[in-house]
Length: 338
Image 1 (cartoon, rainbow, N blue to C red):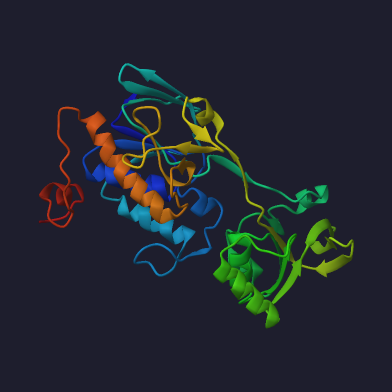
Image 2: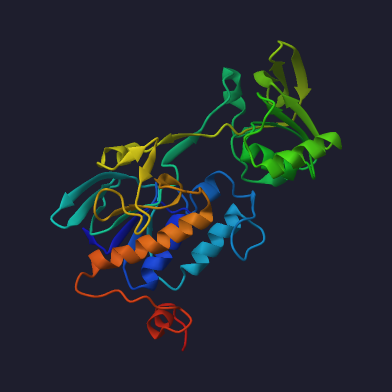
């Protein structure tokens, strides 16, 4: 049995920074994630996608952000349990008994859920024949944008991911952007950029269309799309990308007695604690008035949750806020000389 000050569920950006904040103030923690790698959605869904809203970092990819967060954790010895899912959480006296799918057991006063959107999988195209091209020439996320260079890529969707990739790939590819509506759901600035590129013939834009079939034997050759007025077009294409959002499954978290609203967990804004004492939620999975689903917000939430953990992990000590620029204790934990 592992007796630790805090257990983090989720190894995405919010979970990684929360681990850093816990170790910085002298608390022990371990991290469990059901994916086979560290990084959460940043690695699983958009490792190659540019991110522009990290403070003091003008631009980075999901992979670069993950590597930087891992580097930030190097002064600390943090154990990660990957390919592992939390199956059971129950109260034992003033601690939480946590059991995973691999049989690991933790006893801790603090559990921090940083699980992004929980267990997730992409919404897929409806035509059955799409399945044989999945992960070959038909994808629901981009892990290596270089494979598309100089090719024709047909992108489906009207949200941020579809628009962002249409803009990005239009630099080196022939891009078809297909959306079932006239209006986009993504950021207005990006939608405006898409329309500009369409006018400049850098993007072929098809609105009010949906895919009805894919053609090809060994390799994908073309797709058929159908307009609301029943007009059918055949588009030659090398690759297809579908961005229809995620099917979110909270899994066992749904049975932990937490206040859940539309697959998000309600928290306070002082400690980001749930209705269960000692269980916190940070990142995309938590909900509160004014919540913004930004990585930046997850960092802020994790920092406050970490400090709330101190009270339960060290009940006989008083937490005293310290700055890393001046605190000898914090500099020592970071392995820095005074």
